[in-house]
Each structure stands twice: as structure tokens, then as C-alpha cells.
Image: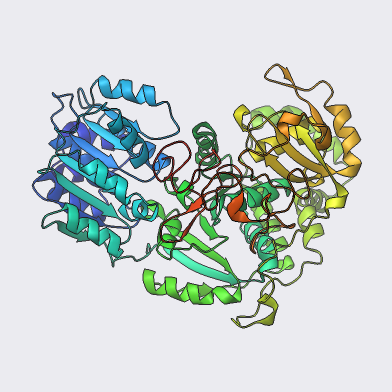
Length: 634
């Protein structure tokens, strides 16, 4: 029987590699685009949702069209993020595993540029790159694109949203005029249409479904809550779905850190992914998520663009995106490869209009859902536990030796009492938490009075600063700690509960952490002999910390009356306490950019649109990142 990919014109070596990866039949976008692209004589525009197999749609034809006897670059693939760059490069390497002399290199920021230059010098036919790092390499005159025959612009809409228009122009100016350009995008805003006009000649256009629509396998729901109840609503949604494996989207880096930190302290398996993490830290977080060792990934739009993880059950929009089109990309993280998924929005009554806008763009109607009651959550958790016990696999060979002792332990209990006790092991904590759980559903009224004035609240958890002591610890991000890692490190070694920890301010070689006053002495005692990487770990009250460690990195340190003055105010939807930059003005902290506070802080682009996830770790330098890369570190 002829393989369906062979019928499309793919050679046996590539077909066999695809079969080994478990792909039996092409997706609709692959079935329609591969025969067109194999001709190699047309520019091409492909519009399809994320998760529909676009990488193979352009990757397989490239492997058929490229001359692998030559070691010169013949195909350039541009994409917006590091994660997506690595994903595309790895996929094409897997597709070409049986193709002799096939070389693919991934070029992206945050990794060793010298290693990437060595791979290019050794000979490469396919270059997969993010715009910022590609421009760096072109600036070094380290690559010759005179033999490039094909340029692929993947996720073109997002590259434009991230401000890469000028970079794309500069990169494409180094490629031959007679090259063929293939553009793939999930949405078709006017900016993407303009790219097609500028770089293509009579392109073949293929649209799978209706332009800008959402995946048909995804259900869309929204919950209306008061701004102060947003975090409690998130927890209730998670608790009501015991098998949830989800990506939670926030608008800013600060919010991702806050949400992840509070979830971890409340006992959930979560972590954050945002632009301030090093490449090593991002890889570590993503590997945990891919291995399903993490249940909830809290991410910003930009950081999450390269997430290609199977079986994500839910996408939760903790904050709606500024750009309505971004919702399509967010929801596309679930319902991939023919699976079903649920996209949830947690909104207040003033955001209903934005939900209606999204409905018009994706061509699907949202379902207004009611947050479950405490009783509903407890019932769901109880029967999830019963189901898990019923289906657990028993290793009789190992367990049989313990059965007599187990039976002796339960001798005085009836069957019913044993079942009750096993069920209560996990069930009790939900009963305790939800025993007096309030109704979190807010009325569907855009003019509801209660929403007025909530804009400045940071969620339902408000911390009294007088109950906490701010401590200095001599480990930080250079030790590959995330805030979640640091929380676990302090709690495990200090033998304190996560609930006793307040704000965590992760720096480079040190950090600040707030703990409840009555746990400070125990923490000092337990940390007397603690070491990390063979060096002594010091914890001191922040006022006793070394002088050189008191300043923030870039002036945007998060403080409540700490060094440097005022507090940074922030908008609604987060957590307790106010935050103001050290000068009292968000625009004035660290660097000359408009919002370059804290660890890079982020900035606003020329349209005034907030781009909080684009900043680096440098403290900022205006609209271009402090490290010299253009727009953002790719």
C-alpha cells in the first residue's frame, strides 16, 4: 500500500523518517500545500491555525528541493521566538535523518553564538533563525545568503506584532531577488498582507478554514468575576478539573511570576515562563512541562509562542491579550493535532465587549460558564480520587509480602471505614478549603458599580507587610534559580511552610525574600550549615546585607519601603500589595527606555502598545534592548 505522504511526492527516505515519528496521514494543510510547494516555482501564503502541522507543510518540500551535495545555505526560515526556532530545527532534523549530508542549524539569542558560527562555517543547507540573532550573524559577515532559493516566514503575524518588520527587511535584503518566499501565518492582519505584497509576486494563497478563525476542536468559555477574585477563580477552575494540564496566560512578566509563585505556595505544581529567564532556565521549565512533571505553565504571549506540547487540556486566559488576534495563538496551544481542548477567559464585567470582539474574529461563540461552588469542587475531587484508586495498577509481586501487616493494621476497621479513610487522605484538604467558599460569579453587567475602583487591586490575597521580615540570601538567577526554585530551596532547607513566605525578589547573584516574623529565627538556625554548589548560603535581614547588594539591578527592584524610596503601583488582576518604581514613576526606573525597570522591565513600541515581555535582563536602553540586539533578544 502506497504511503499517503508518498502520494504527495515525498521521497522514500523522508517518508520513512516521518513514519518513524508516528505520522501516518498528512494533515489538511500538508495535503494541500505540499504538492504546490514541491513545484518550487511559486511564492506561497498559507493560512492555518497553530497545531495543524505547518512545520511539515514547508519542511518536507524543502528537503525535496534542496541540493544536499552543496554545503551552502539554500533555505532560510525566520520565526519569532527561541522555542519555536528550536522546535522547527529539531523537526526538520528528524525529517531528514535518512537524508545524507543534510545539515540544519538553529540560530537564536540566549545561546552561545560562537557555537552557532562554527556550525555555519562547517556547512549548512537550512538555517532556522530568530531575526535578532540572524542580524547579529549577518553583521559579522559570517554567512553568505547568495545561494538561498527559499525563504520561509513562519508565524509572520507574531513577528510583526513583536516589531520585527525592519529586521525582516534588513535580512531579506541580503538574499537573492529570484528566491521564492513562503509565508505561513495563523491570522491575516493588514500588516501580513503588506508583507505578501512587498516580498512576493502572484503568490499562491491557501486558507484552511476561514481567515483568522479559531480551531474547530476548541471550546471557548468565559467566567465573569470581580477583579479581586481573579486568583481565587483560577484556583477553583483548576480544582474542578483534577486532570488539568494547562497553559495560563498573563499579560506581563510580573504577573506570570506572581501567579506562579502563589500557585506553588498553595500546593500546585506550577512554574512561570517569561522573557527574563535565561535560555537554560527556559529550557528547564519547558522540559518539565513536556515531561508532564508540571501541571500548570504560567506564561506571557511571547514566551509561549514556541510551545508545541501535546495533550494540553486547557488554555486559561488570566488576562485577555492587548491584541485581539493574539487570542487565536493562545487558544491554539490546546486542541492540537486533532485533539479537543478548552480555552477559558477569566474576565470582569467591563471586558465583555472584548469577548464579543474575539467572537467576531474567530467566528465562534463563547459559552458563558458559572464557576463551580465549593460543594461541586469537593464532589469532583472525591470521585476523581475514587476513579484513580479503582484504576491503579497493582504490582502483586511486590505488594503481596506486605499484605499480612496491612491487614493487621486494618483489622479493627470495617471495609466501609477503610474506604472512608483512604478517600479522606486527599479529600479533607478540599473540604477544609471549600467549607465556607463564597460564590465568585459576578453579575453580567458592564456598568456594575463594584468593578469601579477595583482597577488598582492586585487580587484577593493582600499581605500585611508588618507581619513579614525582608531577608537577603546570596543565591539568585545566575545559580539557575527561578522564583519557584528559590521558594522550594528556602522552604526545604529552612523547614518552613510555603505559606509563611511573602514576596520573592530574584536578582542575579543574590535575592530578597519575605517571611513571616515568627519563622525568622527558625530559618536562621536551619540555614547555619546549608551549602549550594560547595559555597555557604547566607541569609541575613536585608538591612544587614552587604552594601554592594542593596541596589536593584537596573533600579526597578520591587520594594515595600525598602532601599530607594517609593513603591510601584500596578493595575488590577494580580496580588496583594502595591508596587511603585523607586522614583514613584514607572517610566523612570533603570535605563532610558519608557518602562525599563526591574530586570529589563520591557518597553513600549512606536505604536504605544505595551510590550512588557520584550525586555532583557539589562535594565533597558530605550526601544532597543540593552544588549544591542534589535527589538528584543530573540
